[in-house]
Length: 325
Image 1 (cartoon, rainbow, N blue to C red):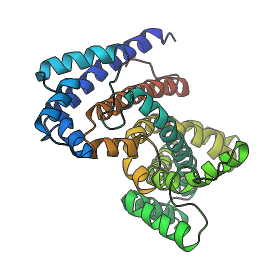
Image 2 (cartoon, helix red, strand yellow):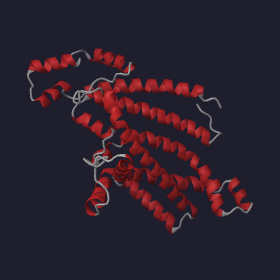
Image 3 (cartoon, rainbow, N blue to C red):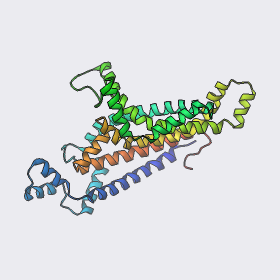
Image 4 (cartoon, rainbow, N blue to C red):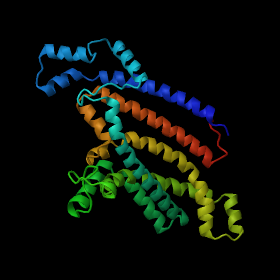
């Protein structure tokens, strides 16, 4: 199957989506009252009208909106996302500094959610209607219904404050200056609480989806044929039922991966995890428009690329599926 035309078409769509995100975000941000010059003048403690006028001229805020948009689109086309009003650093550098932290946390949460959800869903599907099936269903509903910020705060209270097993916030111990494996272990310990808090919500979805998919496949003719050949029930469940039930999970995992990239704001702020989520929150509160727009652009590109990878992975997992249809 030749995937190059499909990939090329999707990359063109990614560019168009990015342009649409830039334009919409640009005008939505400008609808908020006040501007960045007011915020910067307030931070400096000097709000003289002449000073604010010079700030607006320095950052091009005194130009009409269409002119500002045209200039910004031209800069983005050349890879320049502007300069952060508050940090006074290139936006792209600030984002690239935080992005690996978010991707690390999201990857950990996704692996835990998929592995745990498939395992629990498989247990529930083996004996539908049993006590184990009911327990898995209730647990999945509980994780799905509980707000993530509340779950995160309870995790900090129990595991960090009461039991003192895990660190409550940050990505590594301040002032410890660990190196090598010691630093990796320290980062891993800090990642457990936010990662598990982020994973449990999606784990519930995977458990229910796996259970449903396995029960649907269990009545298929090829499964009945495998049982008729004398294959053990465990091998039937693993090689035939679960293997075919995982196909829809590929699509769902890809969608969840794209949601995780831009949807971890609450969890990152609860645990003070230095990622894109906390960066976006800081940009909103500080009215740092270039930084906020840069985060929107990078997130939109990542989501589009994740969706492209999902389509390709689905076509590999299920050869019957054709790209572009």
